[in-house]
Amino acid sequence: MSIINDLVFPLDPNHSPFKHMNQLLLDFFAMLDKLIASKIMFDIVETHFGTTYKHSLTDIIKWSKRDLATCGIDFTSSYQTAREYADCWHGSQLKQNIKTISEQ
Figure (cartoon, rainbow, N blue to C red):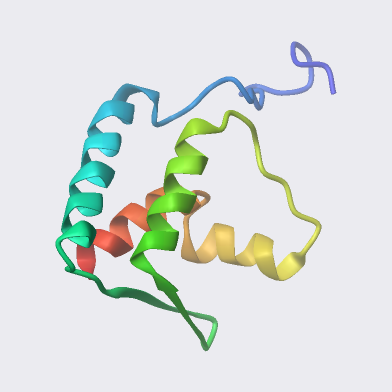
């Protein structure tokens, strides 16, 4: 696709919608790491389309830090995964991770 002619808002893998809050998010993850080190631990539990997923807080933090540090755009050829991103996570797994950690 031509970035100039075909898209009004082109997909730019160098643009991070979280860039303005990177340090705040890294501080949040550092606080969670300290809680885990002091033995405060819980699993993250989510239900999407009738399926319950359970992940350790450590894994969610690790994946979130990786996502925050990675520039790029994720694509999927899986219809179900596309539905989950659109319906459950509103397009952002990182945003959903932070919301779910905060709620739980």
